[in-house]
View 1 (cartoon, rainbow, N blue to C red):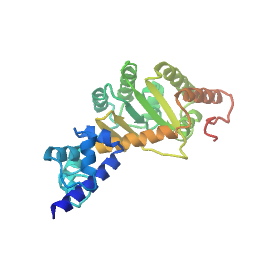
View 2 (view 1 turned 135 degrees about the vertical axis):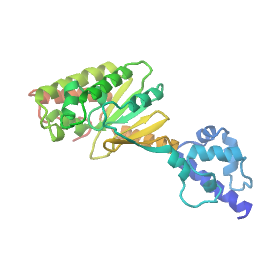
View 3 (view 1 turned 90 degrees about the vertical axis):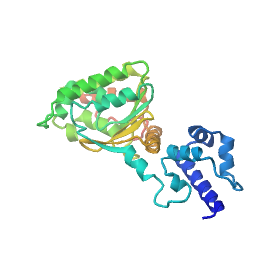
View 4 (view 1 turned 45 degrees about the horizontal axis):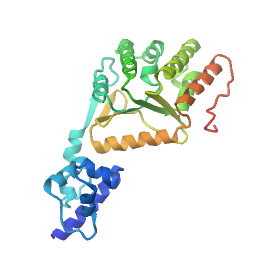
Length: 295
C-alpha cells in the first residue's frame, strides 16, 4: 500500500470515529491530548502526513479501535477485538442479595452523574414490603440483602455530591399503582404506602435525585446503569453485562439522554403524577393520565 493510500484511509477512518463519538472536533482533540488545529490538519483533504505514533495510539484508545484498522491494515470490523475482550464482561449472580459489586461501582463513580433505567421501580425508593413481595418466589434468595442494598443506595443518594438521574415509563408506574401484571397480588395498602414513600423521598432528594417518565409507546429501553465515565452495567436477568469501553459508555449515555429528551414528565411532574395515582388507588379519579402526554 502506498503512503498516500494509507493517509487517505487514516483520514477517512479518523473522520468516522469522530462522528461516531458524538463529540465536537475540539472535544475529540482534547480527549486524545492534542488541539483542534492539529486535528484539522490531519483531516484536511490535501494532507499528506500521518500523526506521530503516540497520537495514533491515543486515537485508537479513545475510539476503542485497533491501530491496524485506523491505518487500513485490517478490514475486519471497526472495534478492536482485543480491546473489546478486555472491556466487556459477564457478571453472574446479579440477583444475589449479597451483591457488593453495585456498591463498589457506585463508590467508584462518586462525583460523577449516574444514569439509571430500573427494571421496575427505582431500587432506592422501594419499601421493605415491596422488596419482600418481589422476592417471595425465590427459594434461594432472601430479601434482607436487597433491603440492605436499597437502604445503602438511599444513604448514598442523600450525600450532597451525588447526581442521579432515573428514567422509566409512566406506564410501568401506573401498572404498579393499579396492581396490574406482576403486581396483581400486592395488596392495596402496600401499594398505597409505597406511593406515599416515593412521593416523600422524591420531594426530599430533589434535585440531586431526578426521576423522568417517558411514554412506552414512543420509546423503550432495557434496564441499565451508567456509572459516570467508568462503566455501563446492563441487567439481562440474574446477571450483568458490564462494559468499561468508552465507546459503549458514550452510546448508552446518548441513549439515556434520548430518553430524557423524550420524557413526557419532568421530576416535579412525577410527584404530581404519583399523587394522582395515589388518589385513584384510594378511591379518587380512576382515569389518571399524564397531563403532558395527551394519553
